[in-house]
Structure formats: C-alpha cells, structure tokens
Length: 243
Image (cartoon, rainbow, N blue to C red; front, side):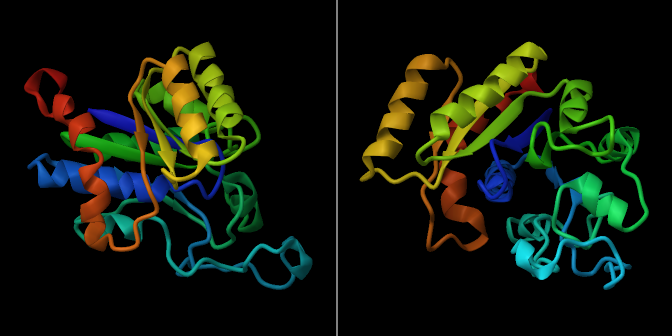
C-alpha cells in the first residue's frame, strides 16, 4: 500500500512524520520503505551553483545548502543506509523547479513515478517537497504525482494560528481532485495552548478522517517515541485485506 505525505506549508514536519510512520510500520514487522523523490538543499550534490548562477542574493535569508538532507531521517528510523530513497537531488534549498533550473536540469513527473514504481514495498511512504501544489516544472506539480499514484494522502499541518485555514484549503484541493485523505497530522501540538486545542477540536468536528496530534519530542531516539502515536492508525493497514 502507498501513502503520499504532503504538507500545508514548508517546515511543518513532513520528514518527521514520514520517519515516525516508517518506524511504526517497521516495529510492527511490515516491509516498509520511505521515499523522498525530490530533495533540494542537498550539500553532497555533484554541482552546487557557483557565484555566476541565478541565485537570490545574501539578503534572501535562504541558506546556501542544508546540513542534513530529509531522507537521512529515514535511516535514523531504521531504513537501510544503502537504500536509494531519492531520484532527483539539487543543491539549492528552494522550490524543486527553481533548484533544478539553477543546475540546468528539469524534473519530469514520469521520472518520479517510474522511480516510485521500481521501489514499491508492502508499505511505501512517499514524501513530497513542500505542499501539494509545489511545482516540479512549468506544467506539473506534486498534485500530478498524487493523482497518478492514486494513493491516500497524509496531510501534515503545523498546529498554530492559521492551521485551520491551511488545512481546509489543502483539503479542498484534495476533494476537487478526488484524492482520499488518510489522516490529518497536527504537528508541534501543545496541549497547554488554547489555539492548538481549538484547532484540533474544530477540525475534528469538520473531518471524518483520523486526526493525529504530535508534540515536539525532545527525547525521540530513532523516532521510537513518535512512532507510538501512529500505532492505532497503522494497525488496520497491516491487516492483509488492506495490503
């Protein structure tokens, strides 16, 4: 079974959720893999754009490269370090279409889909980059990937002021494109914060899918603690009739 993990924005914790889910499935004995088809900000990329490339100036507040690619979190969660989790990597941390353009390359949705098809497992977790409408090139976005995969979506939102609007906008896009929502994840949840609790309560009344709250774990070696929050959710998918 496949799941597509996307976010309501960047930096909402998609990789944290993907790695936690991976750990949860692996702990239950499932043959699970996590894929990050497009990775930007990859410091080990073969060509980091030089000073003559069309890169925003130093005042853009965007770092020249990331210190740790997202897919390395999967290794911490238990994935084989030799497993190739990505098919497109780019040095500059920005929207995939822009990062690819800086290196004179182009991302093709078909290439991503073929990569996923070649790496399917009993449970396959596919993490997007940014949100569902983030462009891959001039004409295609991650929405095209999600539609073609025909896989249920796990939507990750940062539980803060604005989360309700962000969640509902994304859910409307999914509804318009007949994409099933498997779960809504409210990340960085604080049970002592009135806004967090209000967001959770409002969305629970509006949605029929599971809503899972995740706190910001300080002690979460190998994602073992956050994986516990997904045990109830993944249990039905481990039944043979769902595989």
